[in-house]
Length: 376
Length: 229
Image (cartoon, rainbow over all chains, first blue to last red; front, side, top):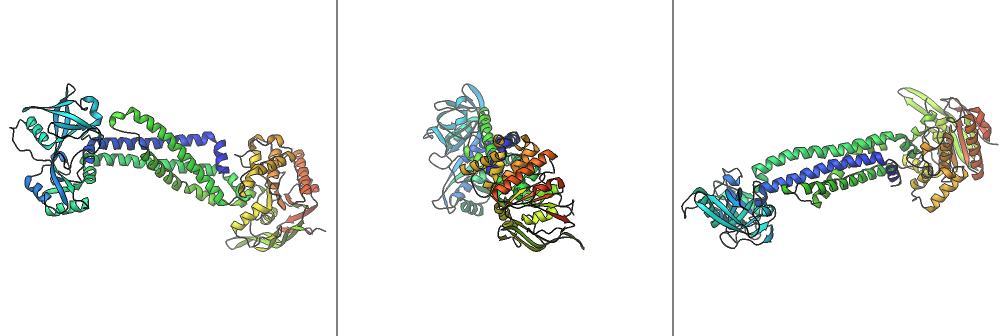
């Protein structure tokens, strides 16, 4: 610590610049991760934060709930599969609605009240207990989707009022205001939108399955796939990950984040390699007067850890500040991603610093006498 | 009592089929408090001898005993510990750690030995700097010191652990004559005051009168009788 600390104290500008650079790069990683998380939540939060263990899609829908429809015989066959406790309809569609006096698009999910498919992140109010009630996405509370507000579905078949009785976090779908209501209310809304006669049957988009106590969701998925034709069962997480929008966004961000994860440790490793070259004569002197190689390596690694830790603190400050400005994107300051990212970046920086460590280990103390000329 | 006892030491470098003898059957003994000047032209093997005596280089043949410890067969790890505990070095060019103050350049010896730079170590560093006429320079960085002052700090560092033997490699070569004389006077005074043995490698005959004995080396061979009377 003595050597590491005194060197950093005496080279504040040099180490300060590196810490700043690390801080900015880690901030970019954190910010993009938050942005990615926010985007995915807005795309698919409603699927992630509902209670069904398994969702059964039509196999031609390609995991897209918008393009899926489940026939009654498929529903009956799924309900009969071993490990399925409840299989109830879950509908999803986009509607033109009037909220807070203006027209907008909103996504409505319809589930059987009390069954699987209910929102799990209720933050205020309650779940619907009767037809005509809905839980809305918390993010859109101020736009006419707050508790007590009435949202009116518009269509050639007339209008249908939904009363918001609760709001839930991270409940958006397709970056739109989203509501969860009873399946019958959902069916009524579809009839209004499509101008269908009352009593016209509305098929569910997917089946919301609750697995039996002790049953494994993935095993149930396999059983449904084997037993029922024309369907694609997915666990909740598989449905989130497999959503077409989510996977393409993840891929794009993954490439960018991967580059950043590469650049941070490379910058750090290169810096410490240059510094090690610059102070090679001092290190040689220290080895000559009896410093163990391990002592010098520890001093180097302590510096790497300190720089990365301070850089991560800088990054956290920037991250917390920047997220205040983009709250509408559904992002939140979370400590755990910062800790995980900092640890990953630190581990990578320690790996790239091994080049500098190797240089330290190769120092020959005899070189301290070079000035006197041990030449033959 | 003998502090440095080198017997029949050879150092041979091999380059392909060729052999270059840097030190040829060198025998040298230095007693406590004795100052030996090792005089020879460039390339004569004097720094090789100094490096072997200080555990920086292993001999090809012969034996080396310092302060009662036979270091002949020591591996690199044991030689490192030996250098830390038994020998002081003052080199020609690179002598101080540039990011440590004068006082910290002394304290680093305590740190390397597992000390924590506590009050006792700090007091000893300050006392040494005071003795070397550098009381007011303890907080100065090496870049703020003159060449002579830097060598004096290096002498302080070499003496910090009370070694039995201090090895000086051309300590005055970067100094003008007047400064060189001052440094040599200081070396003599400090070695005698502590009864510490010293070997001073030099090619400057103007400085040899500060030594108790002069040993000449040419082509790796010691030419004067190296054993003190």
